[in-house]
Amino acid sequence: MDTDVLIIGSGMGGATMAAGLAPSGVRITILEKGHPIAPSPDTRDAAAIFGRGVFRNDETWDDPSGTAFNPGNYYNVGGNSKFYGAVLFRYREEDFGVLEHMGGTSPAWPISYETFEPWYQKAETLYEVRGSSGEDPTEPVHSGTYAFPPVPHEPAIADAAERLQRVGMNPAHLPLGVDIDAWLAGGETGWDAHPNTGDGKKDAESIGLKTALRHNNVRLETGCEVARLIAGKDGKIDAVEYHQNGSLRRIQAKTVVLAAGAVSSAVLLLRSVNENCPTGLANRSDQVGRNFMNHNTHAMMALHPLRRNASVYQKTLYFNDFYLQGGPDGTPLGNVQLLGKITPDILASQVPLPAPLTRWIASRSVDWYLMSEDLPDPESRVTVKGDRIVLDWRRSNWEAHLLLVREVRRLLRRAGWPVLLSRAFDRTVPSHQCGTVRFGQDPCKNPLDIWCRAHDHKNLFVVDAGFLPNSAAVNPALTVAAQALRVADHIRSKDLAA
Image (cartoon, rainbow, N blue to C red; front, side, top):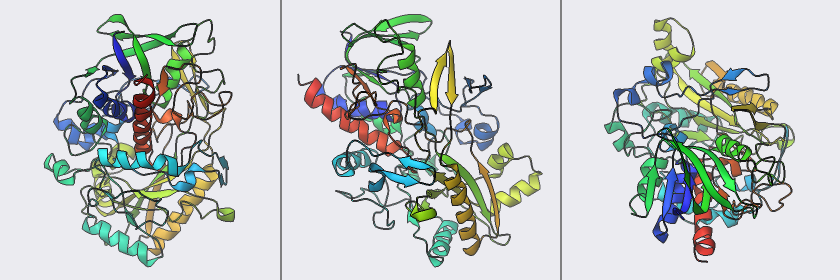
């Protein structure tokens, strides 16, 4: 064998898996399609990031009609986490059970929150999460405490918290993977959607890979585009083929971990057909690529003409008062959290307005991100057609999300923001893509078992957001990291010990 464990992808799932397995001493090879993001002035330049799109790749996918679109995914060391908002939420305990929504039913996990909780604690420790328990009534039980205090609110955000409290809300500090002093030392900007090239943002590269690569048994290979997984007649993954530096290469491993992202992992499985698996690997259930979910989201700018917002980073506050209630018959509506501060350059990249008006709005707005659960639907799916990726995203639970938007508008007006501007995000903005290779007990309904091992391929695991049976209504990064640590512990105790 060329390596003991092969990990495909260096995002939150792959990097954390490497960190969890590295102390075992087994040989670990990570194949990453992209390269590290080099420090440059563009990493802190909103006009470059949002206006000129210098970090966006030129990849296109097709919708069902054949119309191409740029999905906005990133391919680099650390994956999409290099650009994430560093919000490291736990799913709420209720998210692990069946929840009825306006738009349908969110299914239960095959394991309980109580069973999963220890790995949430481990992931929060690994990613140095800054937070504060006890502010949010929906916060689930923690077996430990946050190792660091929350990132402090700036004055305008402290004022926003007080206004929300006065209208009956329970504002809380976002749990963040951010060392604010280290981040601001690199420039007076927010971190949301800004690529991280240092240690200020705790992402898959700066934490997960950095932890793994301290061990000399871990090797990272960049510029590797995986073409297919090769399975033998017994179902075992015998080899992986990939392109690097213009050459087609092949690597063999005892254990293969697929962590390329919810869409890319599904695509690789679907493309790895053979005579025993004519519809793709791990696809006895015909569920690979199905149940694609992407959060229903809006941005909302709340303004008062006489109040300025001088915040630099802003993204420290949320409230979950609509998370488990607010809809008809007490159905859930979703999460409300702050965006990184919308600057004139960011606003100008999205809306064509006269420059003075753009500056006036951005200097006064408090910027919110409204998120509701997208429910699984087998017809919402990723497929392949020749060399093209086809995404047929069938957005669900949209009426609940629109009700959340209306409720938040009403609430923010009562709290003292008379001017509200909002806009929905579409398929060109990845809003936590998940659910294409779900885990569960029944091999006829789920590609993966409860340890994220493929039911049909005993040396294949999938540990990116594809495993999620539901999207909940919180950022999934911590849940992906926790699952990676859980699966790493299982592989160390079962597979590598054998």
